Image (cartoon, rainbow, N blue to C red; front, side, top):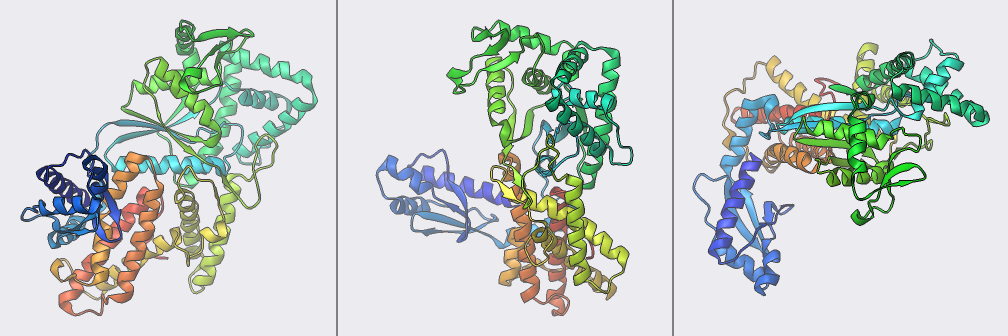
Amino acid sequence: MYLKFKDEVLSVLSNAVAKAGFEAEDMALNESPHADISSSVAFKLAPKYKRSPKEISEIIYANIKIPPDSFIDRAVTAGPYINFFVSRSFLNETVLRILLERENFGNLDNRGKVILEHTSANPDGPLHIGHIRNSVIGDTLARVLTRAGYDVETQYYINDMGRQIAVVVWGLENFKFDVSKKKDHAIAEVYINANKNLVDEKEHSPEVDAIMKKYEAGDPETNKKFKDAIDTAMEGIKESLRRINIHHDKFTWESQFVRGGDVNKMMERIKKLDRAMIKDGALMVDLNDMGIQKSLVIQRSDGTSLYTTRDLSYHEWKAKQCDRMIDILGADHKLISSQLKAMLRILGLKEPEIVIFEFVSLPEGSMSTRRGVFISADELLDEVEKAAYEVVDKKLPEKDEEFKKKVAAFVSIGAVRYDIIRISPEKATTFDWKEAVDFEKQGAPFIQYSHARACSIIRKAQEDGIAFEVFDPNVLLEEQEIALVKKLAWFENTIDVASRDLKPNVLAIYARELADAFNQFYRYVPVLDAEPEFRAARLALVDCSRIVLANALDTLGITAPESM
């Protein structure tokens, strides 16, 4: 609905600009607290035509013609701005369309295949909160892009050729694997012990190097050791991801590009480049003219490939299968990702869209798998669920134990996901689980509770035999009613912006604002106690709110509870 209104504004304004004798490629449409859409196009035209923005806006305004039956009610000037407002038909149509489309409301009609890679943590231990931010950003973007109409495939790229996994394999040969622990945690214990010994006893390093060479050469016995170690770790990692409502469609092993000859072909192509050079026996590429001072190493002096070399082959392989490639990477990958994109550009291959996220920390401090000083995602989720239970127990003392545990489980997962996604990826953040599960703050519990409240109102109406299938949307005239309908209509625009800009945080902000608009409506406008001519329409508006809150929460990967 909102996108159609926006298109109408664009058409009307473009015609007016042309009739006024101006030329502008961008109509400069923006959100505004003073209008449903505002245009600042006059500012863009002022330097070119050497007239004041206010004068230009008045000339354009004089040429605006709004067609009949438009979603535009009126346009007004406010100094240099031109403000547009939605019509009554827009409001009515929004309510009717939500009730008709229900869970499909907000879906867009984009086309194309997207391969989105996220998480891809080394299988040398459990996930920690840094990995979880990657996972939540990736999964939420996948959900957003799916709702935007794309055919989305999520991939986990397993780094099975790196030194870390060789250390794990060596560790499993020299240290006990604790079968009493969750498998990824037991792998981490082996990895940490191995690293301690490899630091203290240098003679073991050649053994790890030998394991790496055997694996890259495809030695069957070594292959099995790697596969067993990785499968063990991944079993635990997948379990953690399932707990926070995340799954991957495909797990791609980097070794397949070595085994299949793709990496060798890539290295041969790169060797023929004028910018390729050999330094200290290693093959590297000069990227200085592309604004990257550090040369990219393609092949070690011993002839083995590097992660980046295999990553180039992986992206070439992905590019053949999709229209868009998206990678979710931590801030420590800024250099390597820029090198990757530059190298793909040099080779004439498709580049990925890269979402870089800054790190998330806990009040306890930093985490490192190598040193064995970290808080795993499992421990974090346990702590958040414990905190959520305490809040639920205090808030709902009369409820039975099973209900409290159920609510605490979905509140805690929602709290983690929401508090991670609400911050723009490029901003660093500290996750405080006590604040995240606070029902009084406008986080996930607040949005979930708003959905549960809407469900409760509908349930009570049904129990009382109050019908609202037939209603007149024209009676929704209160300020809070109109504000709520507008916010509901905004959902598809939020999906559009989030999918184009790869900014999942805008959806989190929208969900909070929608919950707030619904609560403002319910606080000031009677629903169940309203006069019959208003009650049916207001109940329909409650149902619309329930539907769109559920759609927003589902796209955020968060449970939309019917009671809590």
